[in-house]
Image 1 (cartoon, one colour):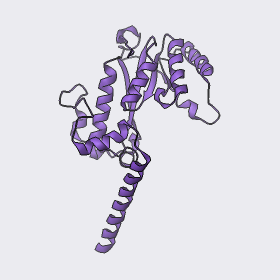
Image 2 (cartoon, helix red, strand yellow):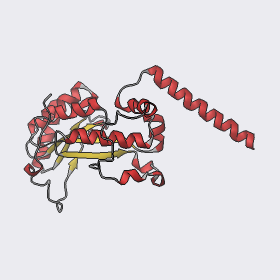
Image 3 (cartoon, one colour):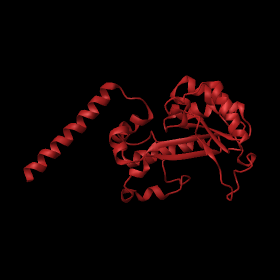
Length: 228
């Protein structure tokens, strides 16, 4: 599988710490505004205008979300030459690989990886604990780093995360050998939780998971009233 490759020195601003980089997400997040949906040709036209405005980084779309978005990212990546072109990506293997393929022909390819970090998202959206999330993020960044140099990482819903619960392990650098690089190699219980984010779960599995959460909440509430 052909993957994007890039030399960080090839982009004029990559190694200059005193330079303020402009990151534009009009083609991805901006398109979610009501009435602002664009087709591929409109996205290319806007990307070229952003290039004329000297925007440094263009988030062209979410390649894994649909064939149409994949095509948009791929076409935009080939249409501009100066900006870094990114695709958004979850930490799933298929997402990362799709994003890498989509920007493969860009002059300056990149990827924007994200994962939720707030307690409510971990519990009800991902069905993962904090260690699982750290492992998934590390694995995804490590995989992407093998194929390109420019990687952005974001913590979804980070403003609602309780910082006092942050484990010490989070402070280790991503290059540390003590951090597991393969998120899928772990004990069976954690592996089941992790697969809910690395791959799709069936509707039955989601229903069972929600049922367990509801049952646990009911038991806790009953115990609290008994104490009163």
